[in-house]
Image (tube, rainbow over all chains, first blue to last red; front, top):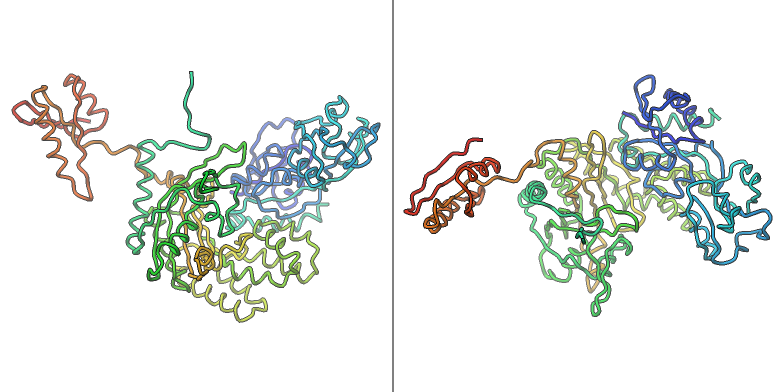
Length: 214
Length: 405
């Protein structure tokens, strides 16, 4: 049976709306009383798994889900061996370097060498500063990264920015954009090549539906 | 207190694990022998430059050792490099084709923090000095028979053509060609769409990305491209190969099945085990007509083609079929001395029973080591599923007792 891994959080509503537009109804996940992690669509043709965004490509890479929807930021950070099939256009945000508005830094290159940078995106941050040839210490965090500079633990952060409000409310300013991110349709490579359960048909449907749903 | 553990990613194979592994390996070896392949054993440890000469191996994936005199050495991550080296340097003057098989352990260094396996077992073949359609067909049919001989159902072959795909990529501007190839090899369609290509090339890239499916259908689609005579010849060859194979196996032709380096020079393939919950790669292979030349002192080219099967993945795929041995083979006989005076007679009787072994079937005889009551001995025999006990008396008398199960 076709299994789709869906990310908890910001991308879930749009993901479910997109799937619904091609006839796969997983809106049960949106009911606030829902505690189920695995549901069948009403037609009984497909199954969805509700997992943390970082785990979507894991289930897809191991083939327990043939399809998944996840932000490009996660793919860029984890580099999982999955097929990247479509830019679904929603969930637009960017991974940025930010510092305290009160600081004197106006570009990433002005950060002093060996300063600390807090981030959930350790790999992306390391790669970015490596490319700048600026040695920094990356401090891995799993949330509320904005506190890094506020508490003085780090000079800068690398974090996702969508509207910029969280940064603003915490007195931070964006210096650089590492990359833009949107939701992506991913697939298990072997399943994509072998096309079981009409997988490619669903992929095509989702692709066609993408601009329409937006 | 210190506890001694194997290093992360290393594992012990206990007797039952070994019995199951041998069950698989023997069935593969029988096929190799029937197809007239001969076993080659190459060193576990090779010079790092030997392992990397083909260009397909990244040094960080090799477990390396530094030797004061030899320099950098590595534990082999695959066998083809070693066999290519051995064939051109040690078998000079040998007549071709050479049909070689191996059954060996390989090692892969896992990135820091990854605790997955480091040592694996592979069985495979290399057909050296054989070019052309029949050599390709032989290797794929041999692979098919290997899997059939294991009683494995639900497997699928994905077949590509590295040379054809490479030449179909030649119209792309050199600066972008590698990126296009990388995106196709890694199934990154979004990456292809984001490339700054003119519309005709963009369309071509997406067309190449989608060249997979039923072989006849794919061959027809690729024939719609404006093929040069060389490409046409490869397509015709593929067509003939597909015709030779079709009846024997379930096949997907996938021209996006390529690597990012020019290691393979003809057909490439992967065997996929299609289980209920998981699809896994059971083995892979392809044609490498440039590789042997890299190891030859005068760079003399010899064509080659081969495949390797992953024993661990075959094991996982075979588990649900309930064919693998579920216990180690029990002894046929337990020979017991009734008293210390009977030791000599018991040893002699056990040895006499062992001589009934044939090359196909062993008679397994174990000697009771003393210190147990007859009751304890019977319980032990029952527990170990030993069929018969031979009670040997000092005079050499033998009483046979069938053990009730």
